[in-house]
Length: 189
Ligand SMILES: Cc1cc2nc3c(=O)[nH]c(=O)nc-3n(C[C@H](O)[C@H](O)[C@H](O)COP(=O)(O)O)c2cc1C
Picture 1 (cartoon, rainbow, N blue to C red):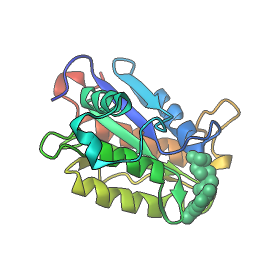
Picture 2 (cartoon, rainbow, N blue to C red):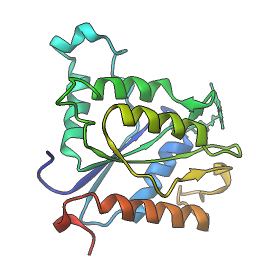
Picture 3 (tube, rainbow, N blue to C red):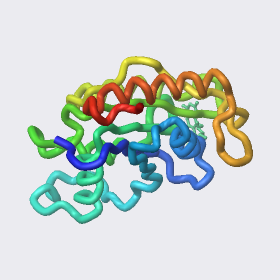
Picture 4 (cartoon, helix red, strand yellow):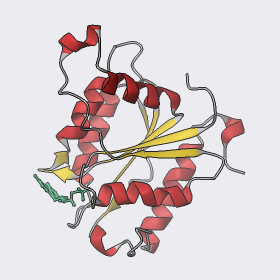
């Protein structure tokens, strides 16, 4: 169980500095109450490819990410859609975070999903796959709202602020719903 100050950890499934998904996660900061610590992890490439043999003595990159996720009261994941699924980079991280069975940091963790893509579908297929995997990890995935930021290049201003009214409203609702999974005394005033 997480302790300490209320916090939300966001993980991007993209490594690009100009990633739309990382930009979206950063833009979310505007919607998270100031009483809650909000951190965006934008580079999970230090994790080695998942190898079950390493479980006896996992590398520090794995222990660090597990510890961050353990400490966070909730998670937000945003991934690029690659070939109708989410990124292999994020899949690799989820494999590390899903072990050891029985005490994995993803178990019972509230998770909100969203995504951004330049195309018309806004990561709808990627998120469908992600939902299925997070069912397998026994995480508590928010069902609504579903947030697909399509044609995303048009939906931010030059500073990275989310400017599309529909996307803003959905993101606001998503954060609101996620906060309801935090311990009661941590909810926004
Ligand atoms: C290998 C590859 C596969 C892709 N497949 C899809 C896809 O199936 N659906 C889609 O909407 N966009 C697809 N795209 C375009 C990505 O959505 C686009 O590059 C997006 O900006 C990547 O996310 P990022 O900006 O967060 O890095 C693909 C891009 C790459 C490089």
